[in-house]
Length: 151
Image (cartoon, rainbow, N blue to C red; front, side, top):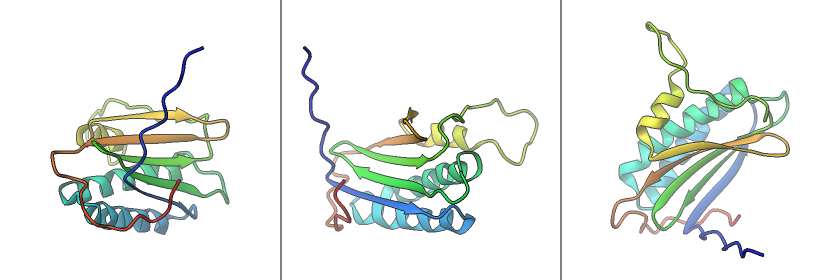
């Protein structure tokens, strides 16, 4: 039998559920920018906020179930800042589509791929989690921001 190692514990994390309304995306974005800056990663604060905004918008538009909240989970690990957004609709997985012409939407996942080191999807029994990771530079993540909630 193989021994599965324990996951790397987060140095800082924040997990919050949001009502499935458009104003929640703005709140999640602002919270992410503030926390990532407080956690000693000001270089990533705006990019992380943009990724939260895109993933939360996708959760609201494509993964939403009326009355079911979506959850944003930010984790500062020793070498990575991880952003996760979980929604209730697991059968609709995100797909990167080629951009043809000048569409006014449909570029969010391309933006996430350009800003982050990696991203992906974790299917759940009910719903899915779309995640993205930023690699930290030496010395980042040493801020004295508070730990909001343990997992």
